[in-house]
View 1 (cartoon, rainbow over the protein chains, first blue to last red):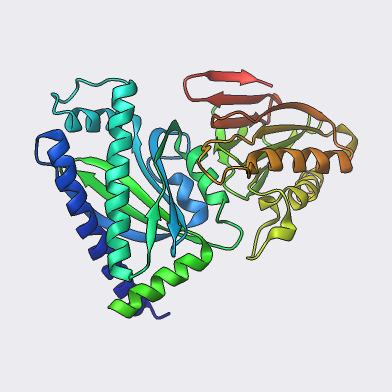
View 2: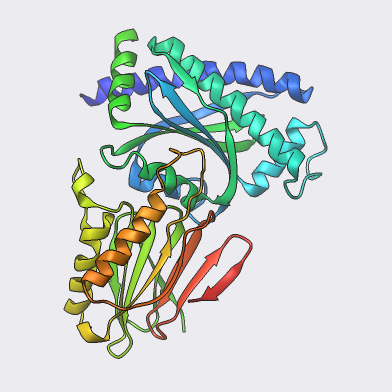
Length: 200
Length: 161
């Protein structure tokens, strides 16, 4: 694949993800009773061995919402925030003054899980619409631990035949920064790229 | 003494023989770090093993990626730096199950741990300590000068194994 062709596909993917997260932002705004915009400043393909290093390093404590991806595209989707950022997101989602939340209780965890669910399903919806592939997310599960430990456990499942993931940086309300990782199984990555190419 | 940390990434093998060097595998989830050390020569090595068996492989992989290829490669690497085979001791850390939702029934962490134990035994290497399984992530460090192997987890500090 030529570089320009690859860039074109990533551009197309970025547009799809932006539109998906824009609609996710509308749903979150209704939930939070304040406007929340989701920006996507960056999307890139990343070698799998580098995946555990995103989000501030492998031993950084993070909150991760995990969704399985099933259907015609198979893989994993992870939305991840450093712990302090996750607390700010909870304040944001629950329309509290910034700094109100210092640790994640059940309510906070549930708010993050819901945000992960909404963002994940809209993200996959947009991808599905843009590629004409049927894609279904599984229910989200939430885990708080070291970023590297969570990510390498996901990467391991696709590492047998794959080398790459798609990493999406996202910002909630222009400041709360998180990372989405889409990790398609090897055959699904090429399928997704081919489907994107067909719609350019 | 200033510590020099050498990070051992996914599938990598690293060896050190300077007293101020520390080998570290950060954020182990289902992966298992196998640590090896000769307390007389003060030579140590670490492999960050991702999968149990190299026969599963479909892509180019470094030997450190698989349990069966990592053990002989790690031994060879420390022997080349002056370690003696009969003095080698080993430790296993990691092999957790971070996400129950991830492929139920397929516990890669446990398979990695089992495969490494089998391969260490096959190579006649004594297992001095281990901290494996469970559901939390771990970081492991080997201090070359002292030969101490330290494990840490979120909210739990350090402990020696």
